[in-house]
Amino acid sequence: TPSRKPLMAGNWKMNNNHFEAIALVQKLAFALKDTDHDAVDIAVLPPFTDIRSVQTLVDADKLRIQYGAQDVSPHASGAYTGEISGAMLAKLGCAYVTVGHSERRQYHHEDDALVNAKARAAIANEITPIVCVGEGLEVRQAGEHVGYCLKQVDGALEKIPADRVRTLVIAYEPVWAIGTGEVATPQDAQEVCAAIRGRVGELYDAETADQVRILYGGSVKGSNVAGIMTQADVDGALVGGASLDAGEFVKICRYRD
Ligand code: PEP
Image 1 (cartoon, rainbow, N blue to C red):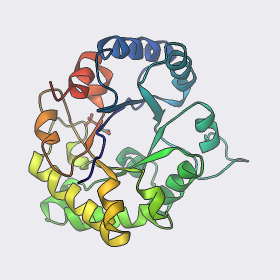
Image 2 (tube, protein in one colour):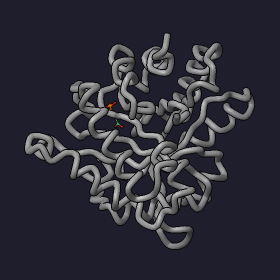
Image 3 (cartoon, helix red, strand yellow):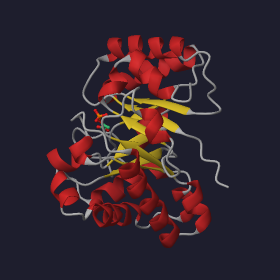
Image 4 (cartoon, rainbow, N blue to C red):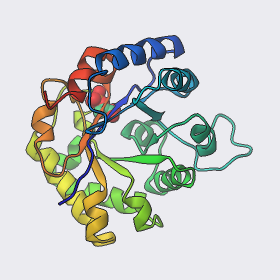
């Protein structure tokens, strides 16, 4: 039987300066001090400008809260004004980086090939990519959501070997549920997460499918997380809005209570 460790990751998006970041991580650390970090991984994904401050706090207080970034350049270094490399993020102790978030796909025209290049840049630096996929409302209404998401998974995983796929994270985030307050039902989340796991099994092998962690994201809150976490193929949550509130994010992390 698979023993996937749940992951609760807070995507702060473009919120919190580095002072606010320290304050929020301190609150989380205090509220989570009795949490069994062997039973659940807890991560925050602040803006780039906050990461050094978060690293300093986590190191100084030996916190078991993990952290990461929201994007990474597909390039290793060089004349790419404004971009941040995987090596830079690794140097800051980032454990994760989201790639292909729907806001990046929508506002920055990121396609599956770029998402794949970013995932590989993360892996090259021992950072776990959190590969985001998810359909918009029209695709969902047309009943084509499973095929749409699997195509995004195929594109994102190209040329990534099985041993690296086993450690990566895929987040199913239906665009119609992001920031809208309209959470997918546990069954909706399970349908697509199970299909993604099945696809990983087809592309690789059963062991890889068993080990890859698949998150649900989209209007997750303290009040709805437990239902989502009952689903067999949902291994955690990628949390936007609710991760900005320490109390709410702690409730999500303590979904078993
Ligand atoms: C997200 O953007 O990753 C997300 C899940 O946002 P929210 O929780 O605010 O819907």
